[in-house]
Length: 151
Image 1 (cartoon, one colour):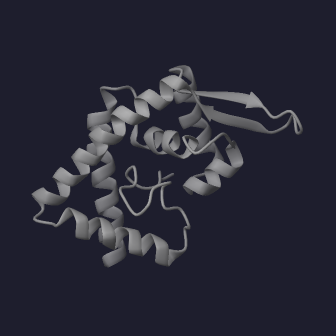
Image 2: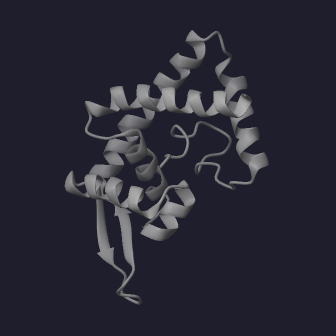
């Protein structure tokens, strides 16, 4: 039961994020991808593994962000079969704006349910660490950009 509640809560939060982010031309999955790329360029296969989505799902998100100028894909020089994705300056600007909006929205959702934002965040970080993702979202124990994208 707890697992289903956690999955349902994640979907509901993601839908809320998408409603707010749609006006800015990015989805929740796109925001998570931009955040991951803010750590540096990466191959599409590695990105899909890190974000726990299929390569096909990732390719659709990358294509959308590429068409809006937020990411760029390049053929890897050592291995021409490999595609590398990197965030553009436009993508970095969008990420900075959207991270603040997303943090505010998530905190608002937790507060509206009567929760303690800091305690809730710490609980989620403990869960993620315990499950061994090893991804602290590039930050020292603070907000994640909404969690991993789902396929």
